[in-house]
Image 1 (cartoon, rainbow over the protein chains, first blue to last red):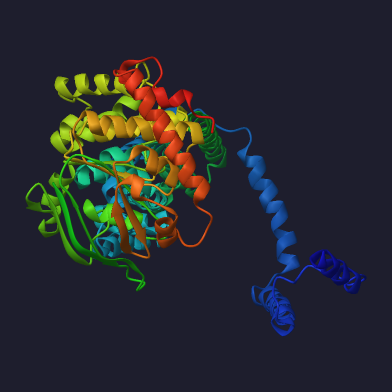
Image 2: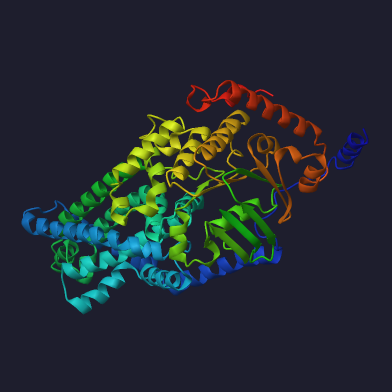
Length: 275
Length: 285
């Protein structure tokens, strides 16, 4: 009885009290200060890059002129085009095949719940370095080291693949259900067998999804690595631009777009089926 | 068989889960470890197969000191300790058969495990056990497609295929409905007796403990505060273990259930092979 009386009294005394959603940043000085800073930076940035309207307008006819030279696309040298495309595909497929296999031990070593701390830190260090470097930077370095051509491109994509698949798979391993792993440990299985029966079944669907996703990314990346000398269709594209053969460039661009679209569609369709 | 001497477990947080617990199980018997949540039941059972590393104390199984083993030797020792879990802990994406056979992992090579080429003897045993726990024909079902009771049956088969020297059972019924809980508890007790295995069963359901166990150990705040037969357990002892509450109903029901079970066992001496185990029909309280 007294409890109900109490709650009624409370609701009477709080009637008419207003409520608003609490702001995301509680401190008002910080909240408005950040807005002012952002506005100030935008003004500075626009000023600093010399955003020149006259130059922009002058450039438009040149762009239109170039676009006109691009049509119709010139597929007459289709053999050169096909060579480039095939080289890109080879780069991407080889790099994916090798990269996703190497990713497995790296991912296991980069999972906190699987290995001792020093191993974990070493593997995470490797992933950190690889993941910070954009593919094009790795490619520039490897082209210097191993010379122009598809080999440098393939190596680049392999290394980048281990960074991508390794990191995401490691995260999946860290998130797995410890109960299933504990049960396999309790049967007397050693570390490798725990990996085989406790960890692998839980992470396999994700791993397959990552492999296909990475193949998709590698196909896309392989088309541009040529610009820095790492072979493939990108090299063909770069050369055609250099020789002002814009109609051939357009043919190459259309081919690249086709590859990327097909890869993305296939990867999406397959991943939708397995997860 | 099993001897635990002054087992103490202090977690890195400073929490003392077990405080000098000693226990001797000298013959095959079903021992229920009862106590409130947080009393240390789970730590106790996991210290025995060292899934949790004991801080102090010694554990002996059949003459070898478990607490003195190096990690690789410990993995070998675990082959002789079957464990059954509260959340079943089946490998969800594997088939029932793979889950049962995973109990043999400690005995096969890496490649045998990788290629799923288990020895024929293991496969025979797995089929026998699946039939024994009532899952004949389920071998190719995926574990995540089973009901709770069925999963725990797979868990039991996985533990038994190890041909262990002892069964460690951690809250086998907490995730199950009351009727299934009884069935599963009955199945574990029956199989342990049938195979002459000592079984250490953590359970917070006093009714089930008194019904199926031959010996009851009470754990409270990391100490063993009672060790005796089920019929010695009275209100006073339950208060000592769990704290103040009205225990009369619990004890009366458990006594009635145990009696009814005993009568049915006497009426159908070979109850194990019947279509439905005897205690299953007596689920309604």
